[in-house]
Image 1 (spheres, rainbow, N blue to C red):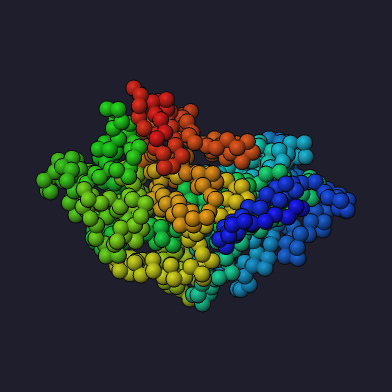
Image 2: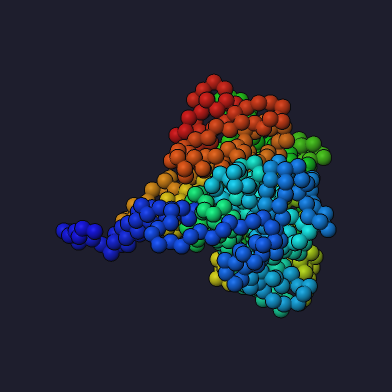
Length: 615
């Protein structure tokens, strides 16, 4: 290699960036990449014989001394996807193509009493492999939801026949033709919620927190790549991760901690800021206990106020759309709306759904989000919808017009009570399904004051290292970006569980991280794209209180196609046209713009995508 002379001093930081970029260029030139591409070099030993989809794989697939093949099963086209001796949950799935299923266990797990939720043999991984002639040279792994868990180590039940918003691994293997996989993140028992994360003595289970937070998804990537290489005799050309909610958090964790695992990541409604937003998910119930004598708002009351907010903020081009396109600017205040207030408070609201001014103010608190003392500013001055927290705000609330029953219904969201119990290291704060040797869940959450809940939030932050940095909010994606990784993120603006402002907050911090490094060659839009979807719930459905709304929505397939086109053809996704589902009684289309651009109405029909431009 020809030597060269540096004629001008170069800052150390610049050398850091240039050296990483140069190393990446050399790897690319030599045929390297996360998918493991590139042909064998001189002197490379002959390739090992391919693995067969039978029990010989148990002795032949040995990537390390902690990995064990538990089960191998070949399914033929037309077979029902089920295992002998078990009852497969859900609607029976019939194989649309030949496919091979492999169950793996990666130790060491966490030893302990046999019946304790904190006892684990290790990380379960289930991999689905299409036939050689149908394989599209991709890996398309899937994320989990909630506390994850699953039947990945079961010898009688399949985990991959269902998959939530990101799709079922089995279907992905059979239909797309990609190798697909998922993981139980280190715990198979899903009945006891987050109790796996607490040891019998009440202290945090650091081993399983680490498996759940980060290790399991990396082991899934690593073992799926190794299995793919040995099964087909060649590595995958591209590796993708597709997750929603917890899976969206997992996607961000992969980019932050394991940036070489995947070429492209599709992350929906990411559950980043884990302890912050989940502690805040209990806030509506604390408002009920402290302000409304423990009596929740009814479904009719929540719907009435939500629909009133929509009616006040959904007008585009002089027409009511039935959903709010820009909830960040909606300042609707039910305490000033006579149409929802009861007659006793000077209103005209129907007796079955009207609210008192105290109840209306409780709704304002819930929309604003958790504060240290339960206070809330007037909506006319602050609705808590900015990307940055206000001085007294612990976390954000859900947007106006969103269906609140998941968090503000008659019972608390169970993950929220689980987490508060884990933060306070006292199982009694959880609901009764939380099982632990010291004490079980006893609904002690009802005793929490605003200050108590704020303290739990503080404890969640203090325990981040113990919880394996579960918040997943590190804005440094430099290594992922420099090696060419792409992340496409989307979030419903009527998400019923995870406030969208947390994703916007992360986006702002990504921007700031780049801006604060003057020698960074990175441009955020080159590797991270965010799309906000008006009216979309925690999933591809209507998240608003207006059940009659005709919402244009993206699909998982559409978003995944945008990601693969970006990675494989360089087609950067600037805008996406979306349609109402086929089952919708009224047809409409819409436009999604890569944040921070927004769809600006410029046409004659607000229900047609061509009436908007991204600006």
